[in-house]
Amino acid sequence: MKNIFNLFAVFLMMFLGSKMIAQSEPMKTEDSLLWEVSGNGLSKPSYLYGTIHMICSSDYFLSDKTKKAFEASEKLVLEINVADPKEFSEMQQLAMGKEPLSKKLSPEQLNKLEAILKKTTGMSVKQVDSFNLLTVMSLISMKTFGCLDLKFYEMEFTEQAKKRNIEIGGLETVKSQFAILEGAYTNDEMINMLDESTLEETDKLVSEYKSENVKGMYDVATDIKYTSNKTKKIILDERNVNWVKIMPDLMKKQSVFFAFGSAHLAGEFGVINLLRNLGYTVKPVLNK
Image (cartoon, rainbow, N blue to C red; front, side):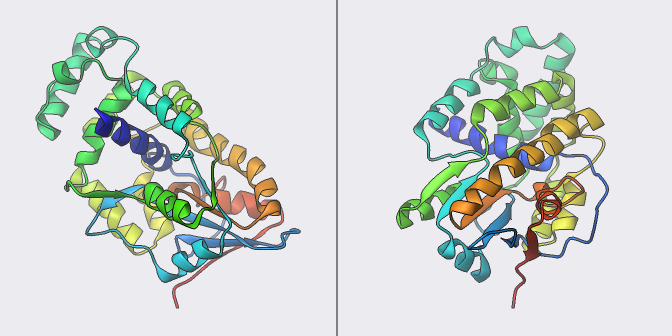
């Protein structure tokens, strides 16, 4: 049961960071997962790092430039502070549905979900009936990685931060992320997204990630078949704007290492562009 909750927690972050619709690119986004933020009164630089959230152990990597930036930072800030026991408790509660899926979904939706479950996990709706639909989505989506030994970037950074005894924070809460998802998608849309998730799509995303091709990841992760303009605004634009309201005060106090889904970096309303609009110098840290 604990593993189910862990998977659900990680999936929330992955899902919110990747299933977006494309929007106009204000300028070229260089190939780098790591970006340095300086200027505008900052005494020390802070860093933005785009994650894929989860990846097969055989594909996991952390570049020397990223290790160096992390070691130079004085605080780790994630989308959600996964080290906070209260947040983890909230994850556990939200993993369970308020009512069984067999009552929440229509017969047509249940039949479609049953077919997807059998095809991807070998499970049936009956076996997951007590879980929230988002929890079921996490189980199915993780299968698209095609491996059992997944590693989670946020958890890796959290463990390193604990070893260094530096503060860990979050840009939002589990409860707020869950509310965003529930308000952004209908049950039909979520089930359709599951039907579209494939090993090929995930393979391409991982390939772009390993190449640090932020724009390429953005293009792979953004597809109109997954969402609508309304949904894009809720789960990407508005969240980025909210984050950028919080980030300046954090960066004034100390050097911060921000780690969040790579899809949040690029685009007109991406974190890079929003910080630049506020007067910060945001530049890629390139491999040497």
